[in-house]
Length: 156
Image (cartoon, rainbow, N blue to C red):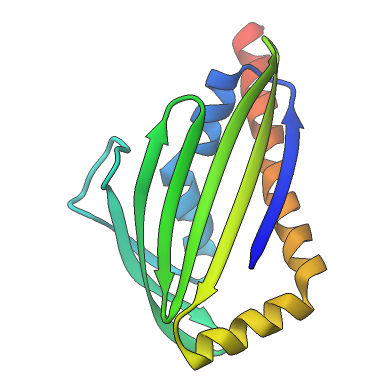
């Protein structure tokens, strides 16, 4: 199942890239939502092959989580492959410079199930597709607003 959302951000691609690939902030947000994450190898700079391990509660059960950066082409594209229990997720961020001061961010979340319980979770997500899309769009808008704020501060 694929979810695809995009947002136009009034900031240069380099600033948008920096904001959207701030993995410390992403980790903090995930931890605030109940996930337990830790970086494998205690890395500080993102690169292909860098990964996380942890757990997250899905449908009332704690499930193991493993994520890895599989593509990192600054400032154009970032892909993160994640396994949560029996579900595979491919999270792809694409950055397209529309103008020197405007960037389109596109997120594609591709989910697939390997187990029966993961298939049931996907079925539930299909039924709640609109809500999932709203959450993705909200995340994009929040990060986009932060990137725009960063850009405004850098110009002042």
